[in-house]
Length: 305
Image (cartoon, rainbow, N blue to C red; front, side, top):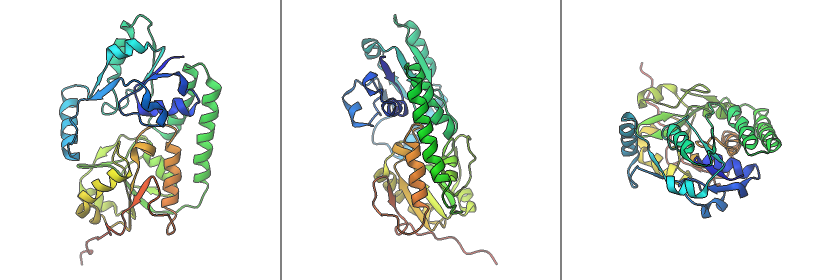
């Protein structure tokens, strides 16, 4: 089956299902696994490169406020690759081409490809989407095997010791956003207490005063779409605010790889969180995170009275 993926998480899922040879085109953001780098690109962002986090947030709010898409779809290229299945999403306007635009385009194509929308709110729904993708591609048993394996990995972590650490997951810093959707479940599965957001809730903004009141033990900086080095650089740009949270430990992680994309690598993210929260002995500099605890030591204000 000829598959076009309009979201990086679907691209990763198709490969994890052993169906990578069926992919005929992907998005401009798809970068895993390396085999996808040679595939045609169907999208581009309308957000200019080189903007700071605050500027990106302002531009996103401006465009979405006007009902405009953040991405452009190359209709000519999509017609040329002529997919039988297009995988997209309607969950987040910031994450992909408009679902309505994709549906309208598919209906105009002579081949009338099937459009599959993936819109998970929680961790198990993400894993369940492995079955939906595989079934749409004609190989449902592959999806069931992958779903069960991902569930097994998370259960194995969940059965480990609880750290009772109070964890604040931040998926943007200017302004601060509390990690929502599946992130609270990931933190809980790693044996910790997630602060400020409940499972399935959308990510939301929060003021630094509100975040200080949460009194986290650990802060995990996971700016949506960024990798660990980029996340660490962003954290250091907000060093004073992060220090004021008073956390004993601060980590920057590969959000793009294991937290912000609702695909099979969320299981990697749960395993990484469990390792980070296990206390001393975590290998500093390991691929996937940066330990900023010494650079951003917590400094809570003294209690009044």
